[in-house]
Image (tube, rainbow, N blue to C red; front, side, top):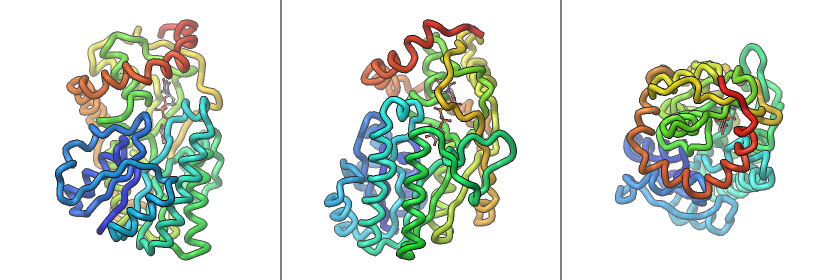
Length: 340
Ligand code: DAU
């Protein structure tokens, strides 16, 4: 297929683009705004590939989106462009509404007008809110609790309305916590791994007993590709890794992989409105032929190794814009925190 993938210079987007071009044999136009976490280095290996083109721009730029869809005769769109970090959404909620709701709306409308055949909206299990027990199914009520998850829920609902209203063939995926190489080091696993490499404290929120279900990025991308090819229009598909862990246990595991002491863990003031647990039921997706393949112990080991060997990728990031963000987010908390 001729595909437009948005956010293809980001973490999940770059793995997805590579998979679609190299393994899937698709032609891919990658549109990315290259905001703070978009990194051209994530796809540099594809730059000379005959089936790959990169364009710098915003999904909310209607004229640009229209031109790309028409000039490249796009048949399918995967919207992986988003503001994604919960903590940043607490500092700056407006930019999340702009990209995750308004930008998604522009992309949907232009794709519909251009006669696109398949549209996949990459979303998140966070739209279900905190799930104390059991698992969320695709029919569950949406109870987003952060500006990030509320913006993603808005994007999901807008996407689904295009099926109900126009019979525009959209599908929504709701993935769990994703990890792997090339993840911007503001997220839990890459932040903790890179801090530990530098013998810096690991700021663990609250009691550290929150639970997340970890999904390897390659499994997440395989799921999106499966939905693109075999998903039913108008449907939602949960994607869970089947690796539920407490944050404290993950912190201890990565410290042990790096041979670093547990005393690096620092309990700090909790994230406001912190969701205690996410867990999804992915049976709908397994019925169309997907299942996770990477056990967490293997995936974490590979990821830790990757960060260990790719300091040239993350050191420039952590010394740039990131410093001011880190001080605003963690400075006071770390000074007041307590060790494990
Ligand atoms: O569930 C899917 C979602 O997973 C995605 O939609 C989001 O884009 C992605 O960021 C992630 O959301 P979380 O808020 O769960 O991810 P984060 O990596 O920020 O945090 C994971 C857990 O670790 C969470 O319970 C908060 C905790 N945490 C995180 C950071 C950054 C800490 O204890 N300390 C930290 O410094």
